[in-house]
Length: 281
Image (tube, rainbow, N blue to C red; front, side, top):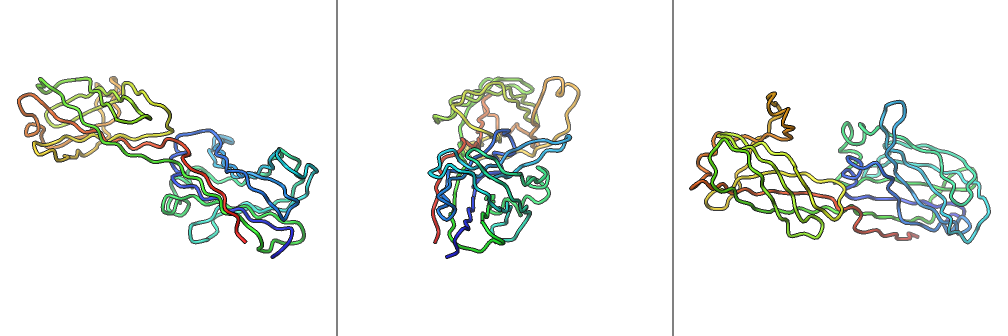
């Protein structure tokens, strides 16, 4: 085993949802670098902007809770890596760290991570970053740790009915999810002969970072009937702040005695649900 070296690898499941909608920093659990004077560290990922360009920045933080309180001079490399170990981007630095010192940053454009090279950075929904620390001329593999963070992902399906319906109509529909995270989603729905247009009116939730909704109609057998989505909006719809248009050839066969049955599928991310750190030898 090599002395004076340590590697921390951090795997974050469902990380994409965090960076698509949140502006706060995501911290790893603390880890102990026993081969580097028992110093304690954290990794962090921060959405930020510079000269109008949006980035996701990866950096190293020396934690304040240290048995060894003196400054340490450390070489380190910050890396974004794919799930198969392929290097995506890296940066090597040397700094003196006191407790609470933050390292230099490895920046990647937000558009590269979330869009252009999405499949590489979020292979199987997991973002992997790594930090190698060493004293001396070069890094050699020795003791390491694997850190895992899981951003929760949940999916709910809830039903509601619209009665006394004669298209075209604008109605308010309340969906009541059986969840401690979300207790109510309220929508205004425009129902035409061949389209549904809906926008969120009110949400009552405990806490979640991001969610998406998809609306279905239910036929007489309770089967989901999907709609095609389109983006073009008339002036009237724009003035009404319509968010989504979903269309099908006709809704007539779904409306029985003036009643239309709807189902709302909600996928949401209630923040970090689990964290773990495992020392590797």
